[in-house]
Amino acid sequence: MGKRLAGMFWALLFLAVPVLGVAVFAIAPSINVWLPKDVSEHGASIDSLFYFILALTGVVFIATELLLFWFMWKYDAAKNTGPAAYIHGSHTLEVVWTIIPAATLLFLAIYQMNAWADVKMRRPQMQPTVEVVARQFEWRLRYPGRDGALGTPDDLHLVNDLHLPIDEDILVQLKSMDVLHSFFLPHVRIKQDAVPGMKIPVWFKATETGAFDIVCAELCGWGHYKMKGRVTFVTRPEFDSWLERKYAEQEATQPGPETVTVK
Image 1 (cartoon, rainbow, N blue to C red):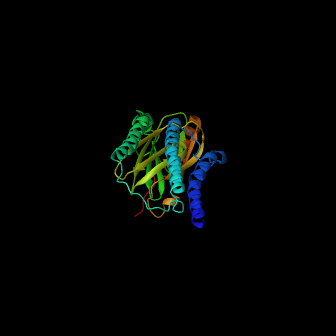
Image 2 (tube, rainbow, N blue to C red):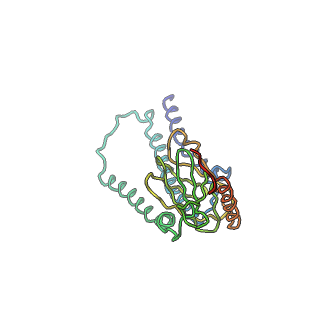
Image 3 (tube, helix red, strand yellow):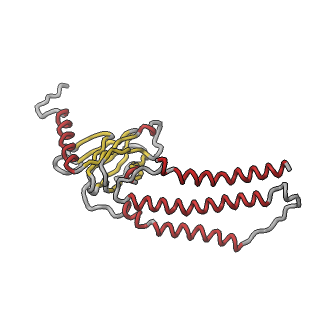
């Protein structure tokens, strides 16, 4: 009797895993422990893909856990005292459970093609809005100067303080100065590795104003945890005003042509 109760206990304990897991996912949005707020034009398609995959894998998870519980309950050693019966297996069954996951993955690959193209293939035909250079352990930013060209002496240089206008296509030129980093804007549903030696385009369109996090999503060294910045989305007039203020601040700290260097 004691062994049977022990078997029932372990079966119920394993059943509690999917029950509690599903319960956590069910209540998480209501207690604001879920995905960050989406403030991008393409975020809805990314979230839709996430929820679809979550539902698909969730159904498989629940079915698997229920089967595990049933087998533990039915074949409890306390109730089945006879010798175990061994079978060789079923070739047909193995083929079936190989084809089903393969077909599912193929379906997902096709289903997500449009969302992937929006954020990775359909690049807007424009000059970079800003250059973002990842460096242990900060984000170095460079805006085109008043000449509108990136890479000229009047470029605006900042660190960790990214400002961008809303309701406009934004093209980021992403680079790394040292190791592999990952440029992650959770509220814009953007995550892109910054690879040393490469210039990688990243594009999106923000739809709401506000200040949000920039984080590194790739372990890049001992200071990875503090590699954070802020992206502030503002209206176009506010963005232009901020740029002019930053240009003036930078010019005020640069030496003029009359400065004499003493050696």
